[in-house]
Length: 284
Length: 157
Ligand SMILES: Cc1cc2nc3c(=O)[nH]c(=O)nc-3n(C[C@H](O)[C@H](O)[C@H](O)COP(=O)(O)OP(=O)(O)OC[C@H]3O[C@@H](n4cnc5c(N)ncnc54)[C@H](O)[C@@H]3O)c2cc1C
Ligand code: FES
Ligand code: FES
Image (tube, rainbow over all chains, first blue to last red; front, side, top):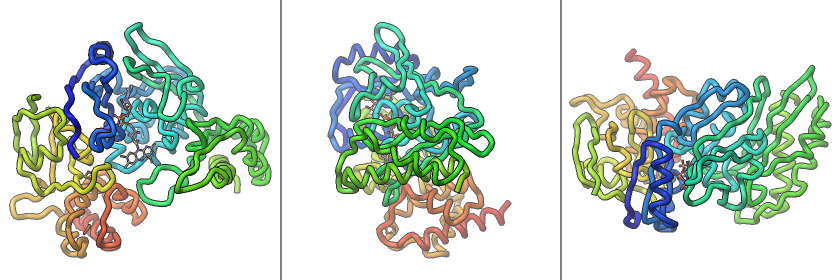
């Protein structure tokens, strides 16, 4: 189908984008990579009156080394994230999860900012941002603010980004030397995760010294499995990893759908967490 | 209406388009590139795949206005004169199509994959074209086609 009519604005700075959103009122919508929004427009599930295309804002495009953190512009594509030497060196888990997003064509267009702002509970990158303690820079009419991942994801498809605000960049604390694995279960090509587990670990002499675990599609937003993270400290055997992973589903409230009921999702959370940690740690 | 200037298959085009026009519709109806087809409304099928500034995209999921100032290559821009692109030759030789509806997108996806990875393994090929659906072939001969294309292109170097 052809989308309903809209006005189109293509700002070249963040300030211009905010001004366009304010001028456009409640109905204005940002277009990032368009890989979630375009299907919505084509199916006429949404009919915004103004589209603010942020893909040509230079400030939102780079991946930069900020000392303790890697800052990724909201307009950076999934393909650029997955291949970035900086990301691969300091954020192995983000690279691993991003390689699992959709297909090549969609990774060439879809962006970091769009994936975070869209906040699909089955999205592959939000749990990574949560587990790694990322923070989000958001620009609005009142200036800029920084929001931690723990406050950014609010509910199904809902984040801290207001209707007249632009997500400018996401800053990930460096996890240099940490190894990582993203374990995703889906049944068919291009399918979103039924459940996935994101694990990154710092090893010390064959044992896990620190772990960060995120879960995909186990609730209205991404979930950080802190109980598992704590239980993993010191683990050096498969049995210890399996015991820690038993706590993965605690406190989760997964949806039920045609792919899986809640009980099965909880089982998957435990099993996939075990596999993800074992692969990240190189323990079998 | 929005003014755009897009290079398609090596020729520069100026046009006035409605912002809501999808790139694939402008390519077909505005430029006559009917080799690029539409197979779905959900960005799944990949039949509409073209190269935008050298990288594969689903042209149903990009607005024509977003291609302003860019270069687009469609299936109709692959051959040089009467010489087919090796990926086209490989699809013919290996019987990589039946009804042919997915083929324009499948070929463009394969071209993009081979640009990045000139000698992909079977697994890398299956992963690389998983954004393209085929209802006829069962993919087997498509994978063989891409393998043969890789060989042909390696042979050319
Ligand atoms: C067939 C298919 C399969 C997919 N499979 C997966 C998958 O397996 N895993 C996965 O994680 N994702 C998947 N995706 C989604 C894909 O990763 C999208 O790229 C992503 O969800 C949205 O990013 P985008 O840049 O395309 O955003 P858009 O579609 O442009 O925007 C999405 C939403 O975010 C808002 N937005 C965009 N940028 C900003 C910004 N800078 N500031 C504020 N708001 C903004 C928009 O207004 C819109 O509401 C799939 C998509 C398709 C079509
Ligand atoms: S027409 Fe199906 S993905 Fe573009
Ligand atoms: S050959 Fe018919 S859809 Fe692929």
